[in-house]
Each structure stands twice: as structure tokens, then as C-alpha cells.
Amino acid sequence: MIHYNIIVKGLVQGVRYRQATKNKAQELKLNGFVRNMPDRSVYIEIEGPESLVYQLIDWCHIGSQRAKVNSVEIESGKVNFFDNFQIKY
Image 1 (cartoon, rainbow, N blue to C red):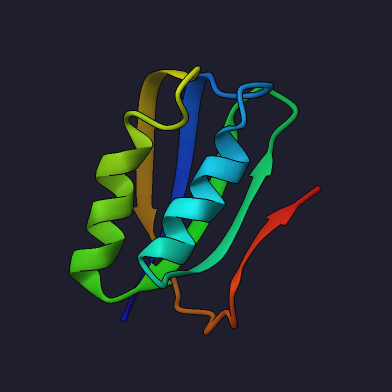
Image 2 (image 1 turned 45 degrees about the horizontal axis):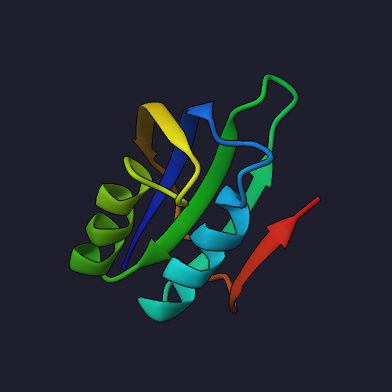
């Protein structure tokens, strides 16, 4: 199991990016959370099997249908053993 902190920048707020991230994470059976940040980026903490986490990271470069992703920054972190995947407000 691995954990990554991800920051997605671009047009990623107001385009259902958080909900699409939750849907993708649940499809891949990954745990963590997603939330909007004051600087208009989206912050994600994700954990699970390495190959599935990398699938989500690849997906983050595209995101929801109306999103326009400019950059995806990733940093490994400590596993928190999240129970599910949530949208945080």
C-alpha cells in the first residue's frame, strides 16, 4: 500500500472534478479524500495498491469532462489507512 498527496492545478473547480475523482477512486477501490483549495487547485490524498494509485494519478491529468488540467504535482506520504474515499468541504 502506498500514499500520495496530489495537487491538481488549472480549471478544476466548478467543473465536477471532485465528484469525478471520487467516482474514479471508488471504481479503483482506493481510499482517501479530495477537496478544493483556496488557490483554486484541488488537493487529493490517495492510498491503495501501487498500480491502482498510479492509474488514478494518470487520470488526474485529464479529470472531469469540463476540466482543463495544467499541472499535477505528486508527493509520497505516510499511509493513513483511510476507510473510504470522501469529498471534503
